[in-house]
Amino acid sequence: LDWLEEELSDSDSYRFVFVVGHQPPFDPGWNEQEENRYRQLMQENNVDLSIHGHEHYFWYGEEYGDGVKYLLVDDVAGRNYCTVSVDSFTFDVDKIDLNP
Image 1 (cartoon, rainbow, N blue to C red):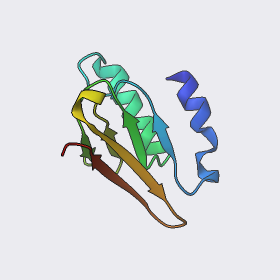
Image 2 (tube, rainbow, N blue to C red):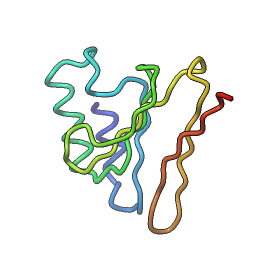
Image 3 (cartoon, rainbow, N blue to C red):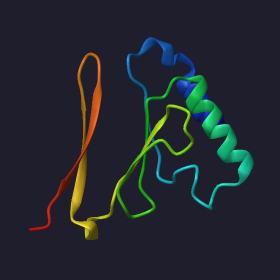
Image 4 (cartoon, one colour):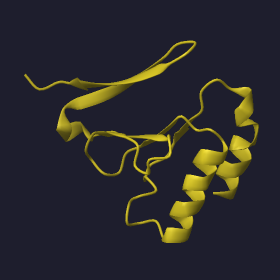
């Protein structure tokens, strides 16, 4: 998390800020202190989207109700993938289902 904090130190220089990591902070593998610090880093650095795998299902929303969006992407068995489209003013997350 120290590394992530350093990487986010110039987040004000960007229109959108996305963070990508394997395990989401609300997974039981994180302890409460780590989860809270991650949440604080997301809020303080105006992170727009935090993208994760690990859970093996698709989910997109606000986990904490603080304006930070989280995206959990599925595994290959789920037969879907996501796109994140970015333009000058917005970004969109779309789930593409490959099942017939």
